[in-house]
Picture (cartoon, rainbow over the protein chains, first blue to last red):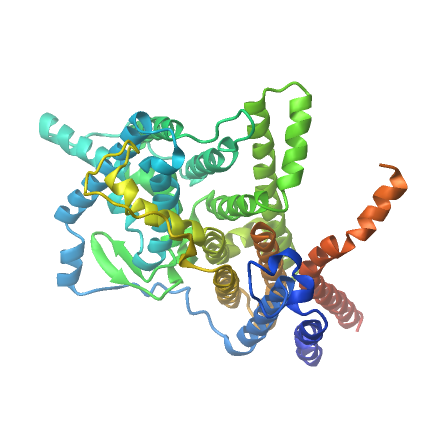
Length: 490
Length: 51
């Protein structure tokens, strides 16, 4: 049996490698690339990158099976940094300053949204919320840890209100309710779904339909602020931030990859990626990971693969007499839910496959045990899909949107003649970054999955067999991601 | 457009949509290997159970 397994393992890799080499010779890029020739200068067709990426995954899988025999991320290896460094970075003063900055920026978003220009590209609020916060904070969290917690405006307002109450009443405010553990992170999942729905489905514009305006963003921010502060008053500021507040939980998901973590006011180091193994403890965590991947998948697909089907459904809704605004948003919502459903089906299908390994856990438990491996994939999808957006929009953010947040011609920090330089990166480089992000993200996911398998299965053979399914999932996600990107870039 | 012309157009554009299938080839190979592995495993388990 052991002999058979050893012989079988490299079969997929060998077939793929042979096919890869043959295809590279048989289908040079110029012949197959069609309209893409003018945009990219690739030595091989784009689909062959999917084959190459799959090959990398299969080889990584074999390497892990052979060389990674004991779990390295399961033990808590958090160690405090020097007390002086920790005190310098994490103290009451920095918390107050960071909270004040976060609160002021929330205020600017609302102010710019309500009183500034309705032109989305000239108003501070849209770029700041959907690019600087949503994307840049997620990426920086992977390096710096959960720094958003310090800047979280709602936490800052909640804590300031608590301090004021203590000052006036002479005692700490008691929360009337205890946060129900069963609720887990589901409120955060709801909040993040609302956010991506606003960004991706509500924002869908069309003939006679205005997409997402700065005013809508400002109103949404105000509604979310009222809701969050009410929940904090009911359950407690820290309790709500830990589990219920959407952005806190979303950024903490990416921060779990980081080598830095603050515990009880003390900054510490831990091995990169190791925080993910303990992140999935609360109900709803798996859903948040899948929602993040699904939303990015949908956004990527709307620029290519799903563009025509969405148009067809929208036309059908319009023909049925539904008004145009509702028709556009309804079709967007249907396909957004479909994309999240598609990603969830892939995930749970792979997990159900793992369940076939004898003497293993239930599918639901396996889902919770292995979902942390998909956090790097969520990050990889974000990087691959949005890094050009960040590259372009952050030029605007730190030039004309900073000096003129309302888009009315103000020069708050001096006049700027700078505009977005779209030539900062070429199409070929974009593609290579996208491929690299997806491959690295999925290899890391394989490592995390393998590490967990080694920890929970009694023998290495069962661990490896359970991970065949994880490999299939990773290859499926990689090929889907590259396919969507190639279509969006076309 | 007549149905026959629609079919011909579909074939004429095969160069466009066939390339999509190529993205699924690695997934097919891995899932195929997985299926073979599962079938062999079950067969071996059954044989060892009978013995």
